[in-house]
Image (cartoon, rainbow, N blue to C red; front, top):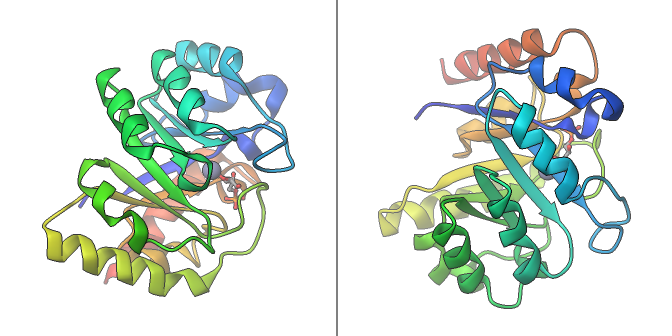
Amino acid sequence: MHLRIHPSILSADFVNLESEVARISSAEAVHVDVMDNHFVPSLTFGPQMVKRLVEVSPIPLDVHLMVENADDNAVVYADLGAQSVTFHIEAATSPQSIIDSLHDRGAKACMAFKPGTPLSPYHELFHTLDMILIMTVEPGAGGQAFLGGMMPKLDELTRYLQTQGLSPLIQVDGGVTVETLPQALRHGANAFVAGSSVFGHGIPEDNITALRLAAKQGEA
Ligand code: DX5
Ligand code: ZN
């Protein structure tokens, strides 16, 4: 399957986001971390910022909601034109209704799991999801170390999806670098969020190329 790189603008220059997204145009999507100072301690963007990003970005938006009350908030970002909206199961009361409402609005639906949240209670939702996000750090901040302990969870997920004949994208988010990407890839991930390893040093497009190269070498 084609590998997807979604750079996270959490590590970009917040006062120059238009030019920052122009620096990652070879990526499949731009990952936009919406944080509300409740679900996680940090506060980032809201709908107005996302609306402008949809207008100026050369690539589609992958919106990752780290906010309370996903039931009301998810559709807001679908209405603004995000290609995919990821909500946390820990912040959702009626996940199936959220997924259906996202699809009704033409957005892809993705559900995220914090490191400590088990998958099995939510299996019946998986056939309606376009992407499943396994967090490889505790949500809330960029630049944290990749949790290698999440690899058994990725294995469990890929095994379950295989037995069911399902193929949503499997995304990992947190600590993805040229060193850790091949590891997650071997355990079934195919969509990679990378913040500090794309925007934290050097030239973002070169860093994206380096991540793709690491994936190729990891497969060989
Ligand atoms: C963390 C966010 C991530 C963050 C990843 O809560 O969801 O998307 O930007 O940053 P890095 O790649 O630096 O770990
Ligand atoms: Zn994220």
